[in-house]
Image 1: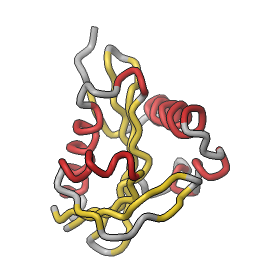
Image 2: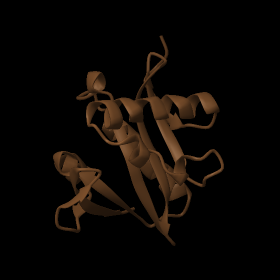
Image 3: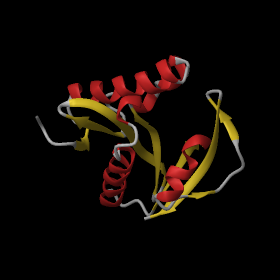
Image 4: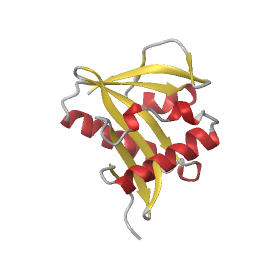
Length: 147
């Protein structure tokens, strides 16, 4: 059995794994419309960086990083399968994403976090910078962290 792993999704198969996790969490579990889940940042030639987390070779988590504005990265589509929650995958994904963001020269990160995950992001050093707002029918807040 392979070791727990979080990596940049480079191959088409790795990207497919990341997208499968996103579909399971956001579309199937949370009821997000597929038209809202997929966007131009998911295109194969887009600048976004996709991450996939694997346990025993099976995908269990995903995340996406893209440039938001000069020096600022945007964290998006962070998802962990329900069966793998509570095992530290979210933290591992965010650590890998933040390391990649630093390598790419980002000074800070911004994200739109679901309010149910706000405490998780606070634990990683993110600060809430907005009032609650609706995104895809789910309450969110904007959060930021300096790197």
